Length: 306
Image (cartoon, rainbow, N blue to C red; front, side, top):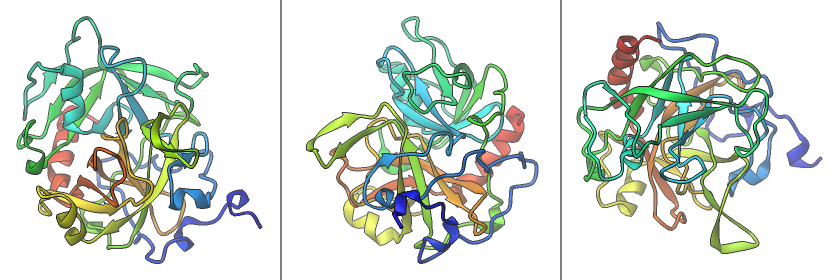
């Protein structure tokens, strides 16, 4: 049987399955179950490959036309009005301009360009019925984020949209995990998706820009492996994932790490993609330490209104 034709429960695909997860109290419970389940694709274990359309309805693209006519970062819906992304993605929108840290601020246009979130997209160039844009009304960056010190960690921000998204087959928040379930065990299998740059077997030296959403399987790994690769890695604030052959690249940062619960059906958010090697060939990638960030995310989300 061809692997890519099979729909297989995710819980049996990993040598270390993800533990049972619960939704954090107060967060949406109508979450994390895509209308169209992800179709198993063996290629995702070794490279960034095309995702099943609508299988990641919580993944969004960040747009600012001052950076180009494509999503320059990713993000994740955790409610109908809130998106989690990387703080440095806000910095990309603002360019050389500084932005507040640790306090809610209105996201102003830069050179006339708004910061927007594209939801419900697969091919981001096609305007399908459930694909649309929301303007980011306001944002808050973690108070300990330092824009010019990647080793400081805390590279995380929450965006408040101008209005709630409409949930449908292509748009749905992911489940936000309860703190009691964290952290996931080393070896737990998860995924990321995005429109970032990628290599193909026909293009092993030139990076291509993804037009259709791509995905890759990753595994939670030991901190020591990221310590060896990144001199500024901080395990108190960051976590390590194994991404050899399928590393996130420019355009993927800010997107989430998505992990299925042991039922293989319900998906949970497990951190923000912070950084990897610039050539996108690293064996490991740094993500936010969700256990450390959890209290701030929870308190901030409640203050902003889920």
